[in-house]
Amino acid sequence: MKTLRKIIDFLNSRNGTRVIAVAVAVVVWHAIKTATSNPLPITDIPLIIQPPPGWSVVDSSAKSVNINFRGTRDDLRYLNRDAIKVSLDGRAHTATNPLTKVLGPADVNAPGNARIENIIPAEVTVRFDRIIKKQVPVRLETLNILPDGFALEKTVITPATVELTGLAYLLDNVDYISTTPIDLDGRSRSVNKRRSQLVLPETITGIKVDPATVTVDLTITEHFINTTFDGLTILPMLPIGHCPTIDLTPDIANVTVRGRPELMHKLAAEDLRLFVDLTALPANRKSGTLPIRAVLPSGVLLVSTDPDTVKISLKE
Image 1 (spheres, rainbow, N blue to C red):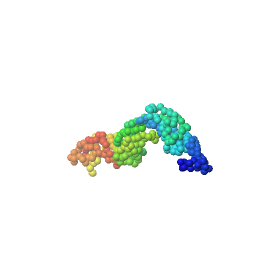
Image 2 (cartoon, helix red, strand yellow):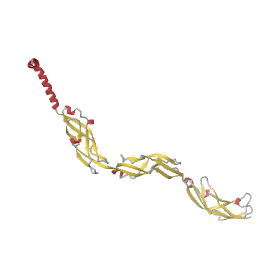
Image 3 (cartoon, rainbow, N blue to C red):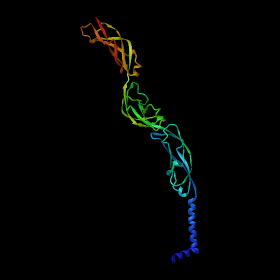
């Protein structure tokens, strides 16, 4: 009782009154601080868009939002851009027509008890499309041309088709995929087992290619063309010192030769010589049938003569 009496006497004293006043002031200050409402704008909060399963976002009228919060200092203390999640739930919208949704507090996940005054923009329009798979052939892309006289005889691409995965509206316009261009300039040898990256047009993005590379084999061969010259005279080749009268039947022939294009384009009948070798006849023979032979420029090959033999008759 004595202790209680002393406390009461102290509180009734001048010093006690001062202590009570300070305590009341602290309580009132804390109450005012807690109850004061303050604004807090937070900008560029990423908008999380949830498409339907097996679908993806084509485009959206907004990729981020601004939110104006209001609350006490305690309510606003932990609010920042990284702590706030804003979601647009489109999982039930399985259609390609646009979805327009008004964003509200239910779409915002933020720490604390701050009040959301508004969201800017309040309305967002988003468009979805299905994710599909599509098999397309691989097309060889080349740069420049092979040297004259060479031809690309065979092309093998392994695998010949690949699988594309992406938005349906994009893949509807893709009928093939190309290799990284192979330069043919100055190339005279075949290409074996070259790995080539596959590329889509620059306007098409977000497509997965499986596999992303292929193996390319190119068979390059020398390219020859045939040319026929008609009515070339057949000359007899005689032994030295022997000059009989010679009858050749026939005494002209058509000849077909082949060679590289740049050589054949310049070739003339005067560049060719047809003959029969009379030294091939036995010494006591005055007639017979001998094959037609040809003397040709370097790089020119004999394909055929028509006829390929002549009848020989010798008269002393």
